[in-house]
Image (cartoon, rainbow, N blue to C red; front, side):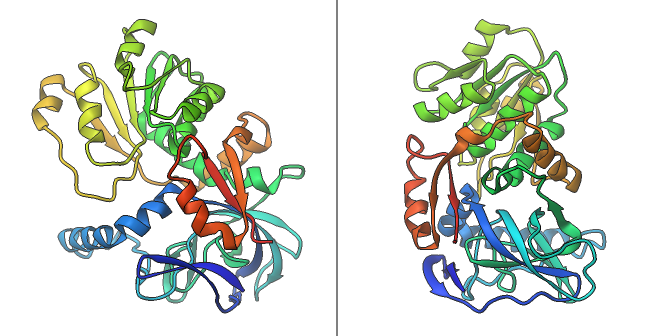
Length: 350
């Protein structure tokens, strides 16, 4: 099958072997897979991330409660892509709940007798920038009738926002600032609006992303070069407890969020910075700030995200700004560097 393959942090289009489903697994045809910013960052900062991950694992030691995934080797082929919707084309031995033709989404992990594998960051299980994928039947969810495969593929990025908002412990009566209105920040905005939180201030340099922020629920959007987000919050309200969502994920943003935050504010870091960063502890100490980090989502949050899209509680259609086939993946990676041009590009292999 054809796939966009990463080897030694370089992307190419190539033929790779078709995957084969094992016991309890299904073979699926990829209908749509979103290109995630973390994949773009992986190509640029993957080696540093692997080094830091190895250091942290050494510091934590052998934690018997931690289920560690099988880590991919960068010199071997890896097919990325973890925001997908697929059609089942073959069921493996022991499968009982899926059949050929079913449309499904899935948590981007799979498991076998070798361990736990992160789909999209595995040498053994190709991700969604390919024609075919193998998934564990038990982790798949059926796509409700009538929901397009393109919108279903947005389940995973929405779940990231759902989890971040839950981790922030924001409640009715609180206000929110979202720094960065890329797909992750916009997912946070969507979930905040679904929870009835307000006011919501969104901040981004990109005019296109600010427009999307308004569409998904921001009360006010600002260009931080022209107006600080915290100033917009003070003009809107300035009294409610404030939660600041850092959804940019580049060095300096956590420190910037701390410096802009008023006393007793809470900061939720959901932007994935793959580089070492620095903050000034005295800023947090003097203002008694609470900083929380978030990663991924729970199975329940993933399922609730699919339901929210299917039931029309959130309209993510404006996020879809382009589609490409497999041959177009490398150019799509380059095009996503322009935030005024694209928000979410879907790979549709066939």
